[in-house]
Image 1: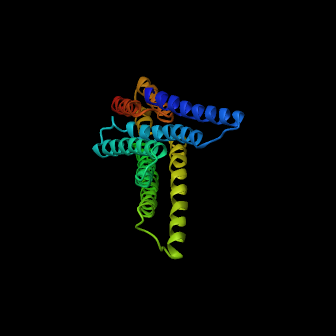
Image 2: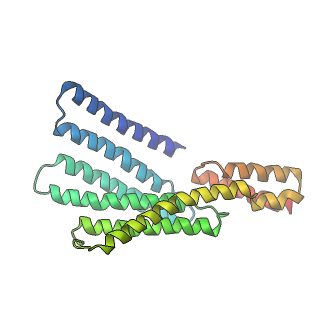
Image 3: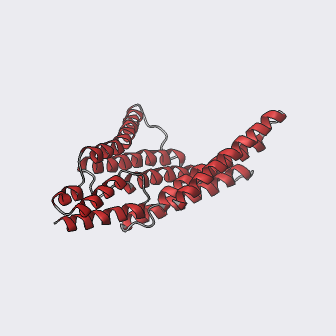
Length: 242
C-alpha cells in the first residue's frame, strides 16, 4: 500500500507540474522550448515512476525469476528517466546518442513493466488458459519491443510489406491476451468456489468461514504480501476441513 501511495503521489505531482507549466505558458503567451522541456520531464517522471513500481512490487516474491524481472524493470525505468532528462536538457553533439539511449531504455521499461504486471498477477489457482494468455501477452510484446529496439538502433531499415502486417497482427494478439487474462480470472473467481472452500464445506463451521473470507480477499486488488497471506489462510482452512 505504501508503494501504491508513492506511485500515486508521483503521478499526481508530475501531471500537476506539467499542467501548471502549460497554464502559465499559455496565459503569458510565451510557450517556448523551455516549457516543453519542463513538461516532458514531468511527464517522464510520472510514467517511469509507474513502470518502476510495477517491478518493485515483485521484489518481495518468493520466485527468483519474478524478483529478477522486478529488479530489471526498476533499473531500466530509472535509466530511461535519467536519459530522457539528459537528452532534454543537454544541447551538444551527444544529444543524438542520448535520445537513442532513451529510446532503448524506454522501450525496455515498457516491456518489462508489462511483463511484471501480467506475470506478477498470476495466482496458484489460475486456470491454464489464464496462465497461457498472460505468458503469450508478455512474449508477443517482447517481440514487438525487439523490433522497436532494432529500429531505434538503426539495425532495421527496409522491412518490406509483410513485416508491418505481421507486427500489426502481433500487436492485436498482445492487446487481446492482455485484456482477456484478467477478465477470465475474475470470471473464474466468481463462477467457481476455490479449492479451499470446497474442501472445508464438510468440515467445521469456523474453517468454512475462514475459507470464505480468503475467497473474498482473493477477489480484491491486494499487494503481493497480502496475496501470500490469503494463500496461507486457504491452506489452513483446507487442512482444518479435512
